[in-house]
Length: 109
Image (cartoon, rainbow, N blue to C red; front, side):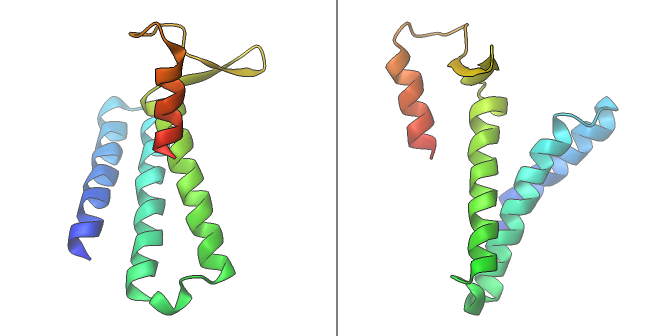
């Protein structure tokens, strides 16, 4: 369990520290939330396996996963952005081919 939780815990703490050092909440606390929720779902899955598969655990698992995917694609990597009410690939791209970026989004899921 420690090997599973430690990376999540350290990233959570790093984000709290960044928020404190920079005197700003966003985006550090949003990213900290990603790691905190992931750690909670993982800990309940390990320490109380009888709840795995229950509707409440599955709901938390799905919400946590969707939040992590959203955060990675929109915030960390900035692959996609919301412009004109539509989701579009970012304007500044290293590769000219769009399929590479869409593939990265799909593989992340």
